[in-house]
Amino acid sequence: MKLTPREAKPYFARPDPARTGLLIYGSDAMRVALKRQEFLKNLLGPNAEEEMRLSRMPAGELRRDPAMLLDAIKAVGFFPGPRAALVEEANDNIAKILLDALKEWQPGDAQIVVTGGDLKKNSKVLKAFESHPNAFATAIYDNPPDRAEIEQMLKDAKLTPEADAMAALTDLARTLDPGDFRQTLEKITLYKLGDSSNIGLDDIAACAPTSTEAEVDDILHVVAETRAAEIGPVMSKLQGQGVNPVTLTIMATRHFRTLYRIAANPGAPIYGVRDRDRAMRQARNWGAVKLETALAVLTETDLKLRSAGQHAPALALVERAFIRLAMLGAQR
Image 1: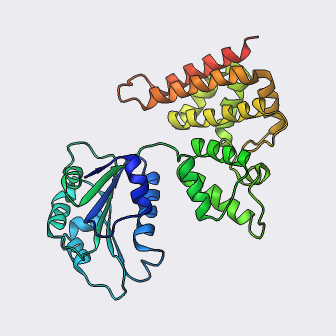
Image 2: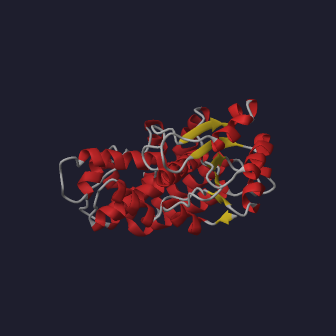
Image 3: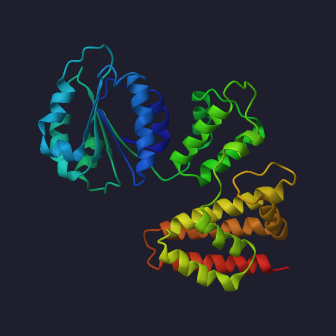
């Protein structure tokens, strides 16, 4: 059966141990891994591996030894509690092995948990789980965690944010990779160790990663300071370094969102930047209204880059957007 993202949230929070299995797939391996980790923790509890109630097997290893999966789901454990057999990086090369395991599964067997990449609609693995009456398949999309997910992460970490801090964390979640955002929360947890007060903006400022890598700072400052003539040479340099266009757009969005936050909330703590004085000057020169327009341009560019029908050179699209932004910022 197919689980929509809306249906997957409550199911991941309270898995059904009587189910045959679950397929979790998506193009972002980190997001898939985090969801798999969440599901297995809630299904098996925190000590499953120590109690040998979780068997792990990469798809390549399973392909060499097809009996491994069936042995794992039929094995009787020494410890009480639900069991699971995890197959990672699955694809249609092991489709028959998975289909046989689904067919042979009986109540009381270990649950079959499978992770995969961006499986096509005609994938045999995907069809097997979607058509199975007692198994689920759910896609993990490249969406940032929403407020409810962030609140759950904070609850798990026993952290309580102030209202403005929650808004700042939501902003960080939209710009950081899922793994980086989770690491930031772990850093805040350590930072607040022994401090029972709520999380404030100063705490986030002390723990948040800087907004960009050093080699990308140059182009972001060139754009933010409206030096349009310098964009071409700097972009050529970045192209030679192999910078990913989507990553560059994400970093630019993060930088301009920081500028917008500064412009819209004068006097508020500033986090996620290397040079605060420079960021304040840029925000003041742009103003909140033009920064809103800049963020709309970057969002439009990001959507074009991720579109399946996009065939124009990706880095050229980003360069064009940066020139457009520099000209926008220069307007008075």
